[in-house]
Amino acid sequence: MNDAEYRRLLKMLTVRACRALKIAAAKGEDWILAAGKSPADYAAETLIIWGVNQLQFTGTPEKLDAFLTKVMTNAIISALRKREVKANRAGKMVQPDEFTDAPALQSKPENLFDIRSLLRDDAFRKALDQCTADDKALKEYIDAIEIFEDGIPTPEEIASLMGVPVTKVYEYRRKLARRLGKHGFTTSRRRSKL
Amino acid sequence: MKKKNEENRHAESFEESLELLFGRESDLTDEELDEELEACGINPAELQADVHKQLFDYANHHYRTLDKDVPEKLEKTLRALRPPSGAEKAKAVVKTAEDLVGSFLDTAKAKSSELLSNVVRAPTRQPRLAFRNKKELSAADKALLQSEQEDVDSSDD
Image (cartoon, rainbow over all chains, first blue to last red; front, side, top):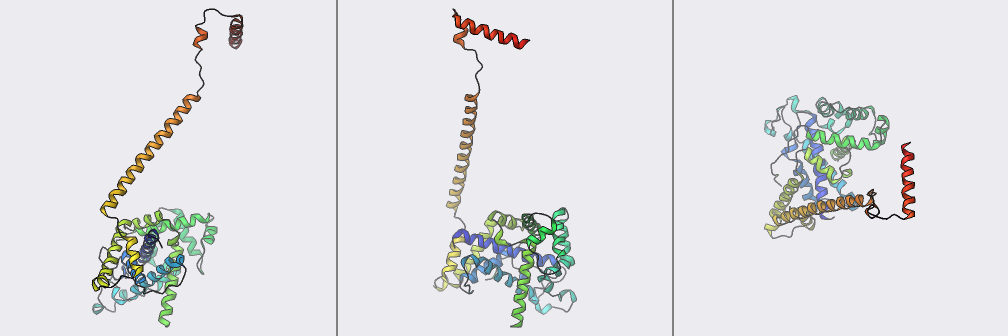
């Protein structure tokens, strides 16, 4: 990999972390940016464990970015699963010894992982609606995804349903990612304790 | 083992959801990646500097201060993410300025040659001074004048 490819890899990892954390944050008040780490912290952590040979990767160089992205997504999911990162509705961090049985603190992240459950989640839906309010086509894109009850539709299937060229679907995806990114996201400036 | 499988399944499902909603990160161009980072409030140059610092601190703490060699991959990543020095930044500014001036001059040159070629191509309607100042007209000149006069008269009709 050359220097430019490393820099691109860092950007891809950070964009993935932003997307994953954004969904987690938008989905519900119980889930905050996991363990107070910023997207950059997750990307750095992944590059470190890769750099010090803690990861076994046997694929071709072109598959490295997908592999590291998956490793980082797993790390984010693991962090979200930890009891101590659950917060109350005001967004305050709750330490394990302060943890109560309050229902608000007991919600599971399971419905974060499945697209159908995610789209049915009120808080996430509200965030999506706010991001697509002024854009009819983007709203229709979300509606089209919802129509497919089973499995994950391909861009071609969505395009065919919407009656638009498939390039439009890619455009909607990029637009939605940027809009959700802008939707009340604050990055952490805290330095990680690696 | 069961827990691990479940975690993997969730990770896979979550990745599918992310891809369905936003597409693959690897499909984005460098400019689109920058745009999305900026939409999330992250300056790409600051991100690189921040991550470089984290990696640099890690390498110092776990290797250099212990007099150990930094693993090759970490060393390569550090080199790739190293933010430009003051001198490199200044050089880049000079290069940008030179490129700007160069492109301005190229545009000016192209425009001026385009204008010049238009001027050259424009048909000249000026009467021939040598003919106008001629004192004695030959028979051929008179015949030419006569035919021109007839043309003018016939167009008036």
